[in-house]
Length: 252
Length: 264
Ligand SMILES: Nc1ncnc2c1ncn2[C@@H]1O[C@H](COP(=O)(O)OP(=O)(O)O)[C@@H](O)[C@H]1O
Ligand SMILES: [Mg+2]
Image: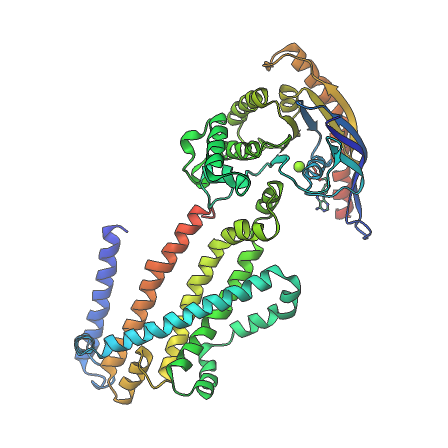
């Protein structure tokens, strides 16, 4: 990234904050629904200083990590099954698409009824959020292994199980990485839905707590944290990983 | 005979309404250590025939035998180089060449073999690179080294230089001939280029199309290296050209007919 781009982005942020401050100074809205940018920053600072936000972040990442790991596991198994077996795919593939289209928040009542107001309920929602999109991507990954690679492997005496491990799995890695990135994005959204309706701890819970106490400064602050984490993880981890893999696999 | 086609035929979509016969009644005997080209217009079934020797396609009729053994499936005794290099992008050049040797030889032995054949195709300095870093010609050389590393009895090549530029193709012709002289592997080389077939081969088998069949079979007894302007070479090229013109006309005419049908 060149310097002028960074400068442009910083200037943009400063301008937005300036406009925000300007509107605040006009005193059209009550402070309680329209805090100044400085109040938001200081409430964020407070949250981190007294450890509340740190605890919440820690809990959120714990839920996300366990949920995402399970989602990747289940999604991969499901996806390989559907990708390899025409029969399984014809029977169940359609339902997978249907399940994937269900918004995560819909699973929350179900999760609460099964697991009560517990962290397990949150993890459950995260798992459901990531599994289906992972499965769909793994399915296409397995299906899009170039046939000429499989033919080449067969002429070298590599077929069956050893072909699956030595050719199909490595050849699937690029789409698998896309699946990973999407599973993360979906799980992150599901996490917030689950935590918002949970009894804490977690970032989503802190958000609702702030709402209950009419702390707009905290609400905005937490929304900003959620957005920043989403963007940073996607850009610094998953997009980068995916790009590197695509390049090496000759797809980019 | 080393490699023998007996009344070999191929149909796709057998016992369905789109059954399509690519060729039938192919009889060829190929001697060991020969460089044989199969030449023909596109669509005449060259790739299909070669895939059958590789064991990737089964035979609908007749048999193909290698050293008396009927071919029923793929086997490392028959190495194949495709028009697309078909290398594994997650492996380095060296690992690609070692791919067929895994489990069959010790790692050390496999590495040594890979180095040996990479040297033969003049790529030892690139053995740690990944395939996306290589040009098309270099990738095809790796594919050749990979096939040779299995020590196959016969090397099958399906338009291996078809996607390369003229100059690279020239260089690879030279390399392939020197590899062949060094290893004396039997090579079955598919091409649609008359020049390429005559420049390289001991024997050129010409296929016609619709229906696919063998229309001629020549031994090219011009000493190598064969210069482009050698009058014997030019003579052969002319002769084969005349032979193939009729076949190519036939393809064009049928395509035009189909076209006019679809416009009516
Ligand atoms: N898997 C297949 N199913 C049906 N038809 C095929 C298949 N593979 C090739 N063909 C047909 O067989 C004919 C010969 O194909 P091919 O062997 O690729 O020709 P060539 O290599 O000489 O250009 C073509 O008409 C092609 O459409
Ligand atoms: Mg072909």
